[in-house]
Amino acid sequence: MAVGTDDRLLQAEENFRALVDAVEEYAIFALDATGRVVSWNAGAQRIKGYTREEIIGKYFGCFYSPQDQAAGKPEWVLKTAARESRFMEEAKRIRKDGSSFWANVVVTAIRTPDGALQGFLKITRDVTERRHGGTRAGAEFGSRARTRTAPIPARGRP
Image (cartoon, rainbow, N blue to C red; front, side, top):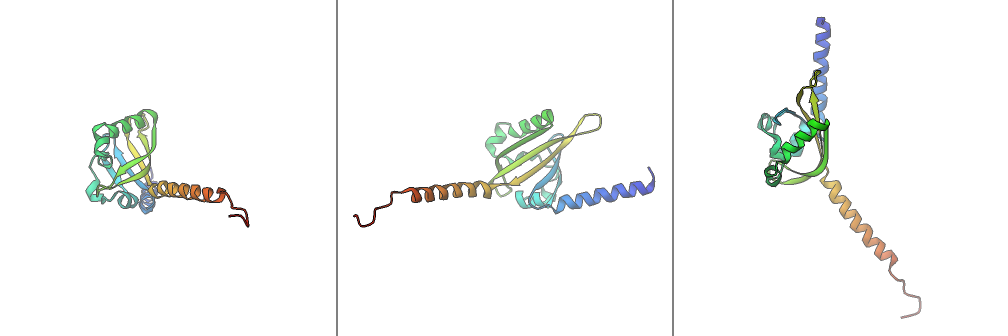
């Protein structure tokens, strides 16, 4: 490759990393083939609570409850993503401070050109507010519907 092409590729890669890092509504990070965190964006820090320095090199199982860890769920997720190319779910995850949140999660297997598993890309969105808001909205709707369909007393009658 010509030097100019190398420079353009390097610049494109730096631009892409800056773009991913600027996304704050989604945790976007990469795992190696064993599940260790190898990249971490600003959204991941905001949602999960770990700084880049704290989490790089750590096993991603720390985002799961102790019960899910004991049941082998993190390993199962990676095996499923590796086998099917992608794993998606909406489930509880754990922040650094121990609090839980509802997460929409997509784990995508990353492969080399010859098909060998290189690692995984993980995208997580905190959907707690939507899930709780949906519950509240449903309760409000039910309450309003009951009020609107309650018998209306006839005028002039007790």
